[in-house]
Image 1 (spheres, rainbow, N blue to C red):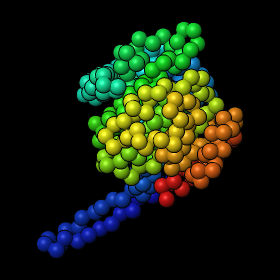
Image 2: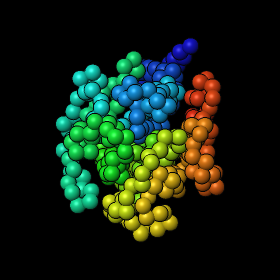
Image 3: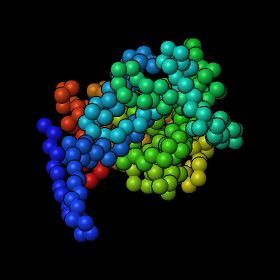
Length: 302
């Protein structure tokens, strides 16, 4: 039911009556939409094959938009994505920045598309060397992890955060999923903490069963350095930075953790519990997802 109240006010000059309409249905909708959630996804269906992670990447932004949150969504533009079929197009005004990683310039390309049958717009982080030339997402044709996956994760993280700055959009919640987004909590709380868009943002990390097999290399810590995000801050983590160390980094710099898969690595889940961070177990009922996540977000925001 829509309620409209009418108020009248007399003008002191001419005795005229001015009438004001307040649409409470609109006001309620506006209040619901004021909280903003930035979803940073490793995978989103239908742009990549359906997996637990890609279905989550598609479903969660849609559900939280239905719950009244304002949404922005990002993912890597994997080389396997068919741009014509997905109707991707480049956003010239957001593209063109060079990101320096390991003393090398890497041009940032931003593309955009809308998920069919939803109003969710997806921003894609692209680069010729890191994404366009790869025939698979995180593994080569022989099934081995790409040796520069660490650099690719860094490029993705910085590309997302720089694009959000250009959009002049301030997220209340930054929700990360997949190990490709695992360095984002670290950057948000260090290198980008003084940026107006991120100073008050809360970060949530969703843990999945999927994980890389190989470590990210001994130069990963050095490549991570940017502004006041220093390698010296990473002494507690192993030098080779394997999957467990990457997960611990994400947990340490997040405000909340979601156990999204039943078979999340046991050591990593134990570390999350012992960190005393707010933790949510993925609801098993579809009907409960919006309610539980809304409650979790609000608890994180305080």
